[in-house]
Length: 416
Ligand code: ATP
Ligand code: MG
Image (cartoon, rainbow, N blue to C red; front, side, top):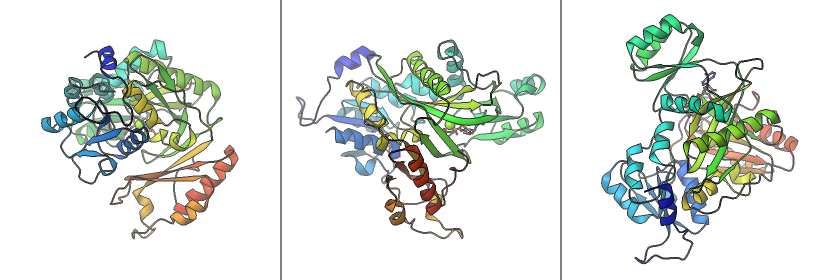
């Protein structure tokens, strides 16, 4: 079905409406993680029923959805059940089998589509896309080389000293810094590739980052696009720790460039849904004009969680609007915000003993919004929830964020 066909097939359906077969308006999501949970909440607020396809019986999204289809993401019966229940379907995690989305798209509108998700799942294709639309977006990615064969390894070792020191990244299935190794020499490169199982990789030049930021874009079936202002992100050990979302979080000219680049990347892809584009800010005087595109996520993103509490439409609201063909409001941020990720580490004390975080003290601080994802077991590095701090001005938000980070022992705020 074409994008237009999808739109025609999808007259927006609202609460209380029941179709000819007696079925309630239902939206589906492939994947049961926290992004799916927050999508489900947004869809339900608009009166939709929801269905989640997720093998885990105790998933964050499955636990809060009207329907939970407990099956693998590529299980034909599960996919058929999802398509049968839902008027439109989306996905919440990057590594959903693109084939599953293709199967679903034969029956229902699916946003984002299998083709664009497939590009975002593979760093080689993703970077090729960034290079292809560099003329339009005005930004390119870090210098890199594709490494898929021993012959390519030899060529890189012989001719691409310019990429060292670098980061070797698996083309597929990387997240939160997993599937990445830093290499300084040609010998280390060979060893790192072997350690990663000699799978398809890219070797990327290590850039002198001064900051990182990301931009959330939503694009509808009709090509209408809205976006949020760039948020500045701080990673600790490869995992997002802090997001700064307020005017002045980065130089305005750079913010404008990043936002325009993200919009043109979404347009060039013919993307439908919510897309997050991550950027590096590199030291001035580089060849890159200060801004380099890193990667994109074909879904809402951890760095956009602040939109739930600081904007009049969240990234999850926009996911619902985009997939259902509803008008896309240009979101307005009404409060400055800092988002602090809550990893499983917070549930352990300095001696490694389990503890209950002191939520009472945290919630006593003005403007704190606690989100917990309903995960039963805390593990170090596992995303258990987040806190958004909002306030009347940036200074007060920073003060409260500092206090909360100290109370919980959260990292990343100093590096900002
Ligand atoms: P995500 O959780 O965002 O999906 P990921 O595992 O896909 O992460 P990347 O975003 O590629 O990985 O890299 C993780 C972090 O490592 C980046 O946010 C950045 O801090 C650092 N990094 C990655 N590539 C480079 C580079 N070329 N130069 C310097 N730092 C880098
Ligand atoms: Mg990343």
